[in-house]
Length: 433
Image 1 (tube, rainbow, N blue to C red):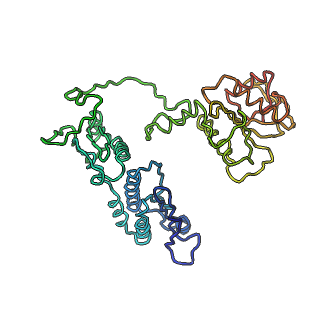
Image 2: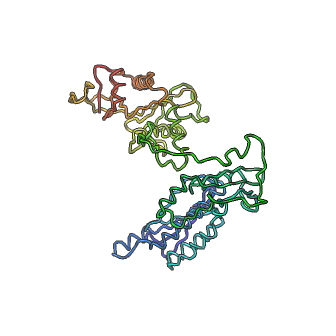
Image 3: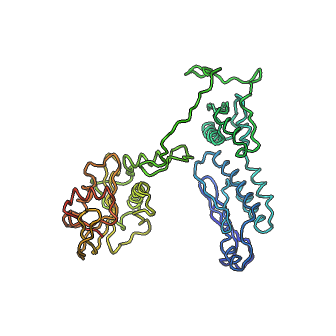
């Protein structure tokens, strides 16, 4: 499947025409209705340009069902879709692309949302049946189609989202499941009926019928050791409400189970793993805006570590386009150890500086117009901090430029960690710009 565009308004086409863009990805296609120009014209004319609420509800219903279907097939992408006056997006499996196009056409031109709802029904999965109470075996090719391991992973995620506990095991051609409702979830749903309208507890009082399938024992721990056990009791205690980790990630609302935070925290601690396709002839690599794209991408990836840690608005290395020289000689120093990039320094040259004695509150000194290398940002992986890595990077910058380490300029504001580093290598004061 190739990218294509379907126009909804008649010819001649211009920027005001409504159109549907179809863009294939590896597992699915993104079908996106572009009504940006159309909405802008109606806004200027004082006409209604917003999407009707029924339109938005039908799109969200279709997207939820389609994304479930895509993840059911084994894809784990993160989906973010828009449903506003300018753009309407649908993510659908390839075989449903034409149905999605026609559904958006009917909704946009005829205000008929039945095709969107029909698409949602066609894509909907029997999740409630899969998570029904009771021990049972789901057969591949009969109850589900993906490989058993893929299906079990998908079902575990849905059970967790519904507040269920799924005791499951994948076999060669089936998946055994026994969904249960934890007591704390039962208590939560019973005490907050407004948040869970229509919820019915089908699990707590479930009794296996006589002759029900019994999961075969496959060795390992004895089964049934929790039969007849009493529930764990919980107590309220005062806990510190730390919402952020030192690496810069939030400790709350980890919808992916913490995988994203774990990966980022590992890179923040040990450094960013150096790609195997890059040959390092020494421990320190100097990347410029004219370096091969693989090196510039690595610099951008490493620069995300301090961006996330310090909550900067922008990445300090954004040169990911065509190779081009910059008038101020922008460059990045990447220090590698044990297969990881553990140090990063972004720099460029400038000739506007003032001296500073490193004492908080003291005024800047006289202006100096000497061309100097200027540190834009410096970062060291957490495991290697306070071991002289930062000073090594600054010395490399000075040697590369051909000046003393005390002649290097620092961009303001200088962080507390930066001030401590500057005081060690230039105790009499630094240049700032």
